[in-house]
Image (cartoon, rainbow, N blue to C red; front, top):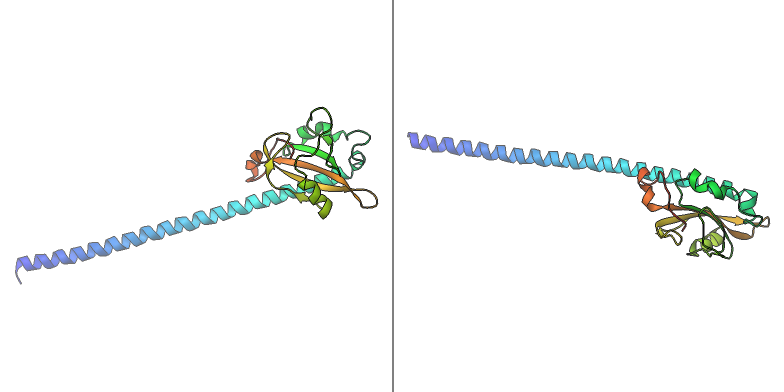
Amino acid sequence: MNTASALRGLRLAFAAMALIAAVLLALHVRQEAAEREAALAAQLAVAAEAAAAGVTQFLRRTEDLLNSLAARPAVAALGQGGCDPVFETFSVQNPDYANLLLVDGGGWIRCSARRLGAGPVRLGPLYILERAREERRFIVGRPEIGFISGRWVFPVVVPLADAAGRFRGIVGVSVDLERLGALGGLGAGTGEAA
């Protein structure tokens, strides 16, 4: 075997080893990328679960708040003797909510934590009132532009009934969607009525 032939064989051996090393390096890079992707997916899943838990907790707290408000005599009487004092301080004491409304069965706003224009004001979208009338339970409405604020909100309401169980209206809050970020969802908020 001559020197040229030996060099050619040696070059082929080195080329084969370089090719094997390049393939192994590519596999290693691909495996690291897959591991990073899996780790990121796991982190996103944890963040999504935390956000969902935060929203669920917020909605439970909101339902408890609305049920306690519905039990107040002036709210249960639909503000006939004047609005419950809670309406005066609600926005300051409850910054997670855009507004607090008391609405009769005809859709007329009886009390609001936010000042309304002069004269009677009717609830903007009536679907939430109709759902509460039909379902007689805690309702979370769809996102919409608030008819008082012009901001994106979603309404949350509980129905009000008289002693005989007849539907009388709703008490509800609206949540400003722009303020939901702190909880991945919900933290502090101010905005307007749905």
